[in-house]
Image (cartoon, rainbow, N blue to C red):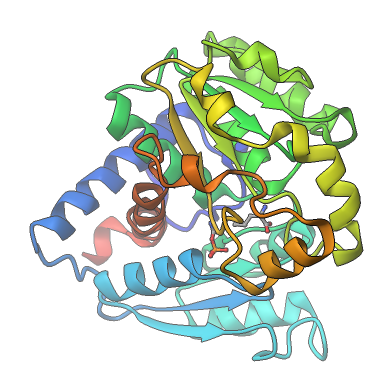
Length: 333
Ligand code: CP
Ligand code: NVA
C-alpha cells in the first residue's frame, strides 16, 4: 500500500483496506510511544499547520506527532497568515509547498482545503472543515477497536446535530468499516441526502447499514457506541443557540438514555463538550437559557462508560500515522 504524496481530505477518498492499514499503523505508533521507542523518521522534514478556527486537540496532536516524527512544525493561527485576506489559496498552497513537506488546514469551507490540495505539491491534511472531520473519525475508530477488540458488526449511534462535520466523517468511517451507523436527531438537522446516499452505497458493500431517524427510542438495546457533539459548531451564528437548544434538548445524552442501552455500551464525544457550567460559553448559556448541561450530562461524561479522554489521546496517534504514511517514500529512507 502506497500513500506517499496523497492528501487526507475526507474518509470516502480511501479504501477499506487503506483505512484499516491507517488504524494498524496508528496502533503501532501508540505502542512505540508507550514503550519510549524513538521514531524520529523525518529529521529533514518540516510541516505547516494552519488554523482558521480554534483548536486544542487537533493542533496539539499535529504538533506533538510532528515532533515525535522528528519534524519541524510551524503553527499559523487565524490571524497569522496572509491566506484568504491578501493572498489566494492557490498562491498560498504553492508558496507553502516550496517551503514545507506537508500542510495541515482547519477552516470553514471544504473547498478551501480541496483547493490547497489541488495547488500544493505536498500532502494536505484536513484538520476539520464545516463539512467533515476525517482525522477525528480515525481517532474514534482506533478507540472503538481498542475497546471492543473488533469493528465489524458493531453499531454506532450519533445523537444530536447529525449534519455536522464530526457526524459526516463518522458515518463515512462506519460504512467503510462494516459498522452500522444511526444518525439520530431532529428532522431539521438531518445529514444531506447526498452524503447518506454515498455512505449507503459503501455500507451495502460492507454488510452494514446507515439509518437516519428522529426517534431516539430506536436506539434502545441497539447501540454499542453513543456519540454526541456540541449543538452549535464553530462558525455558526451565536444567535442560533436558542433555536438549537429547543431542537436538540430531547436528544441530550443523559443517564436515562444510557440506561436503555446495552450493559457494554460506551459513550464518545469528540470534545470540547458542554457538560457543566465551568466555561465562559456554558455560563452564558446558563444565564440566557437556564441550562446547566447541554449535549451530555456531567454524570454520563464522568461515568465509566465515557472513553472521551482515550479518544482525545488517540487523535495524536492516528494523526501521526496519517502524516507518516503520506510523507514516507521508500527510496528516501
Ligand atoms: N475534537 C477536536 O477536533 O478538538 P479541537 O477542536 O480542540 O481540535
Ligand atoms: N462540530 C464541532 C467539532 C469540534 C471538534 C465543531 O465544528 O465545532
